[in-house]
Image 1 (tube, rainbow over the protein chains, first blue to last red):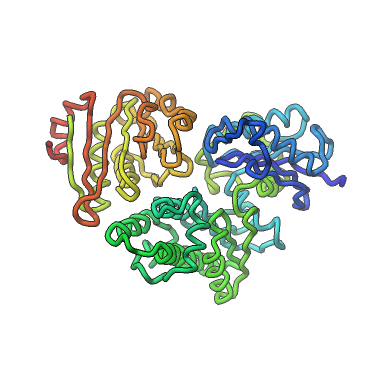
Image 2 (cartoon, chains in turn red, purple; image 1 turned 180 degrees about the vertical axis):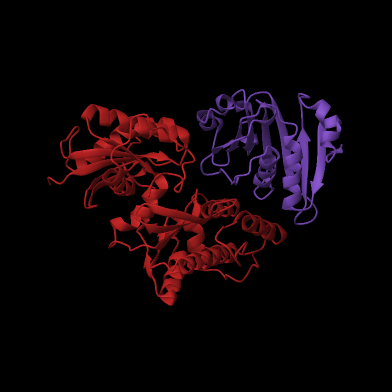
Length: 339
Length: 164
């Protein structure tokens, strides 16, 4: 109960999140705005996109995280405050940053800026035993499709990324086009199980070589196929689309594993919840003889616990950041002095 | 003034984008209107290349606004690439403060600009993208309602575009 903990705040995109994480990476609490009943307090509408929503949500989310962790405001067992400083939506980032700075100032504790992507890299370590570098993380979400090599503590290489649409974005757009609603990933995943993955001949862009991805052409190809033959079964479309996405993701991830002689492949991001991707990457890992780390969905999607884990690493390695640290919407993993 | 053209590949769509970039002046906004897969992001990649941006310009659907630094040619310092696909209403788009983001030295390209055209100021060009006959064909139509670019559209700098 007396363990030193770090309060972490994440507001880089849609979710307002706060967590309390101990130094040995035990998550005392992790609260995400969509998990708590705020509708009554905010008139029934919680706008998804605006920094304004973060302004309204930040204080109750932080209060909830502290309460669940049995910590009070200004608690001496809070060692520091960590917050996402980028990448993300600038307006949203600024809300979390300003809030974290205000709390750090008021409580007189150190303040630490965290790269959102580094947070995702730490997410798997909150649920499984420590991974030994080098390992590869396939980060797939609505905003990112990246292959990141972790070569040592804080030593990252962006091996490849999408040159157009993120994988999750392609999922959402195809789902919306098929009338499956938003978010589209779970709907397509479920339908795909009932369809024929070979019903449509779809492109696997850039599959043959390299580590970059392209999903824009696949999305367009699916839409053209439906336009030409409106009688296509939606389940067949979903199965064929999903097979194409997973095929490319797994092929490139395992190519990356081989290229750096990695010990493990790690999934992260919302698309990591996809059942077909989880199965395919697990099988590929077994075949390649490497470990496969599949974090739970709550740890794959945006959350503050992972920011807390990365925050501890940064705090221990580099100390606190100055209050002049500002939001960087396009913060990169490699350019920072992380190693 | 209006111009239209038909492209036959993603590469050609990018090339038209690069030609379009020659029209842009600081403070201007280009609204892109077209369905999924019509080539809006590809066109924006072409505009970015035409402005001399060499880093990758990807779909900003998730982050909604991406900002790319320009080397300052023709007084343009920033390309803002916005995407209103996820925006359900003008009220929400208002929170993005697009009109305020387009500062004196910036130009903006707004995908799904038809969602909230009133939010992006007056100095705007509109490009509609529609599917052509072949799978890869796209019909691009540029509308310059306020005649902001008459001289350039009539001049040689913009010869790739056919008059219509």
